[in-house]
Amino acid sequence: MLKQRIITAVIMITLIGAGIFLLPPLGLAGLIGLLVVIAAWEWSALAGLTSAITKVLFTLSVLALLALSAWHTQILTAHADWDRVRDILGLGCLWWAIALLWVRSYPGSAVIWRSTPMRLLMGFVTLVPAWLALVYLRVHSHGIALIFLLIAMVAAADIGAYFSGLRWGKAKLAPNVSPGKSWAGFWGGLVASTGLVLIVWLLFGSAEHGLAAVITVAIVTSLASVLGDLLESMIKRQQGVKDSGRILPGHGGMMDRLDSMTAAAPVFALSLLLAGW
Image (cartoon, rainbow, N blue to C red):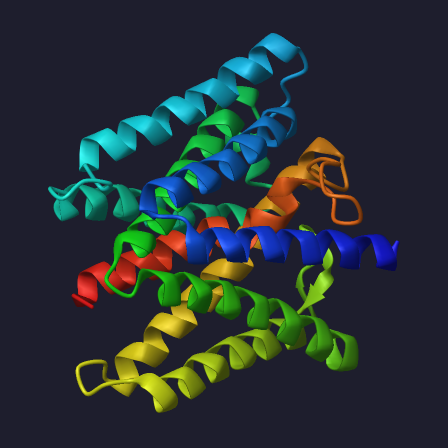
């Protein structure tokens, strides 16, 4: 299992890393869109859909919304409407504020969202803003560096949480949602992710990016990544499954790998947009 996980991880890192470096914005938008479409197919099952036709319809609906958001914002053209980008990202972040309340109050909150239509709606507001956020980062003047920084932040939070949780993880963070996660892991991940950003700022930062603002963005992005993970864990627990799918040997489904990013990306992108960076 470990060997399989490593092989899959190396292949994914190589392909995605090459895509970020080599593909133009439109090409990378297509690649990320493909990953989101796969995640949408998995989400359809997590939402309770069972027939192939309904799963296909939901997946195509997500794809249509990706195209609609690109057209509405003109984000892949020279005439991008940043106010419209901000509005969609803001909607995504508002959704994550609601998701936080639902995760904290689970299983009681399930009475609100456990129906299939509600879970499908959750899929739309989880996946579409995340895609738009990553496309926004790519068209940014420092796009490639920002995407790699976001990926590194999410990875650092995950690694920091794992090792600190392994060492000190007794008090549980959200036992009803994900019994394996601890407060020690939460703080360890936050410190690791924020520490990484601090190092990057010390090496490459400029006067226009104040330390306090940079640390604030790092903290809220790291917190969002945890929430993304917990939301998917809550959905899977409600559905009674361990993984979102089996497309990635040793890792489960695509959604299992994108869960943290679905929340971190819109929060990070909106923070940059509002700060005018």
